[in-house]
Image 1 (cartoon, rainbow, N blue to C red):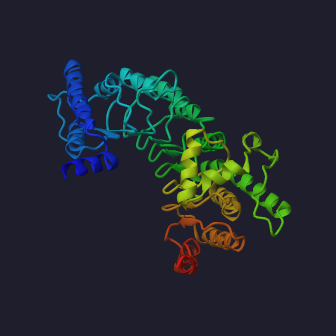
Image 2 (image 1 turned 90 degrees about the vertical axis):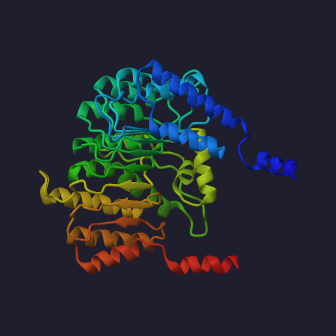
Image 3 (image 1 turned 180 degrees about the vertical axis):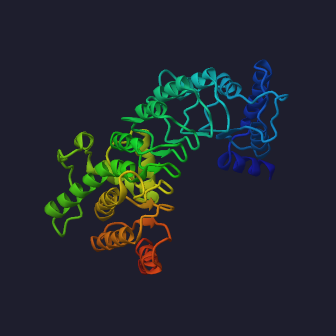
Length: 409
């Protein structure tokens, strides 16, 4: 009987040596903390011990500043963790999350070396989260350089306040990045001038999920971000209607972009195969996305999910009501024509009743055109009828789900 249980453990769970690997990792980490005169991160120690007790691989490292930290206590540093990963050749870690730390130049330099694909990286990270971390211009520039060569699929820089020149270091590292798909820049102090730069980055990268909540893009910044996406979506839709036969299920072929104000759009049209792989939900297509990430995903001017809540998109900025009208025109174009878009969050932006009515009409047009359901969130500061109608038109139909269940039975 004991032999049978042992055999099951070998097939289902991780091998027993993981305990020894993690114990040695913890010992080495504590050694480097002592050498660098820094504190052992309680979260790192807790997660390692929990993984040892459960005989599980530790894939996520969380480095957190303690709430009760005082000047007399040694600071927590990222460097001992990175030194341990390299010395122990720990290749099982995929995520590093750092919350509320002041990162020094040596720490960022070592992190950058770990991120870069040059040579033989010890830890092929897929997720990097730097939340409320402080970095000087040199560190941001070095991080931006590393992003060009990293294997990251997700980058989170929430609550890191950036000046224009500082955020440019990050943007330049994301251009032509064919691996990163999820970018989060919540509450980073981005203004209207960042919109156009973000639009350019999206057009030249594989990013398909963009979090920008809590910034101040206003109408002009959001307009500059969405314009190339809306133009591409409109062209693709028109080409599909013009060339696809009624009985054919073949997706539209790549389009030659028009020249009006979209040089980035001209460069970034991509194959319909890549578009199909990157966009949709479902188990089979998610596997396709993962496979495409591994082989590098083609770049292009489109998103699957866009979060613009609390960005001052209300027509009260310098552009006034005209700016809001122009933004809504581009937004509704994107809603009507984008087959890739699945979710938009415009919460806490007081767009007004007229804009809300235009969004509702665009959703109805999208539904008539038999495009995938688009989930959209708007402020409740509009008439209850319009709000309710937007909600109804942006949710999946129960009828279709019931039909699928019946078909299975």
